[in-house]
Length: 308
Image 1 (cartoon, rainbow, N blue to C red):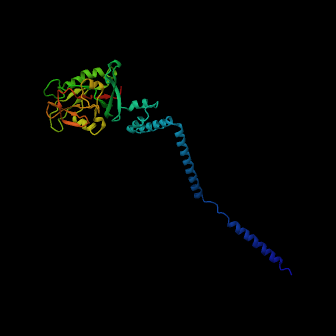
Image 2: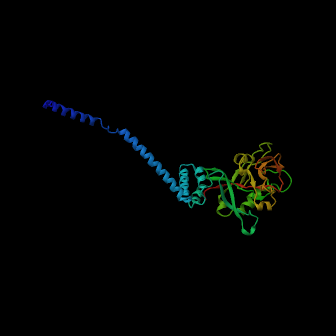
Image 3: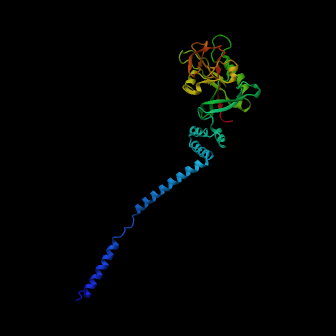
């Protein structure tokens, strides 16, 4: 006897349809928008990482030239943002790059400690090959007046502070006359001479012994005072006066191994018969050396216009 009546068949069909509908409802829920965004971010990070890795690989393969381009452009960014010292520091790392010299020339006087070339003077002791370019350290920069304070990198000659025994101030010294007459006319010509600025030079009293420094002078070339030495050079390797061969030939007493010498300052020493000096190892000697000593080196200083 068949129990499948028409009513039962309809019921079974309805149940089957209902089950199928429920199974469809239990399917995958469409992803939320936030989940899609997160997934896109993850993908983007992975792609960025690969781009970075590939970029570094390209830089490595391109070699030094490509690296120089990057350093140069980073230096320009620093300079354009006003961080000139950082920019020039980077430029000094790529001296052989073709564009470095042009950009560096505009800012070489603005960074303290930078070494520049200006003028020429006999240094190697061989006069047959002519004078060599003078190297200078930038000690200070005045942005308002566009001028820089520079000092020779080496002790370039032997100069007697006073050519006979006796008291002397900077104003009356033979060293002052030699710097502003003999040296300046021998080392510079034309436009270079025009860029050297005359300055009011005040020589302070000796920091330790209080010996009077004397009158204010008007000079183009001068020596540092003891106070200026402390301000610009104390504790630095630039404080040490390495000598040129020409200076040694002319009588500067130099260490046989170190090649350094005692160098004059313009501040009087313990008394006016002495002059403060910088020692072989770059330390201030406030007591000083006799004014008529012939074995001390000289490191000229001057203010120069950076425009010209």
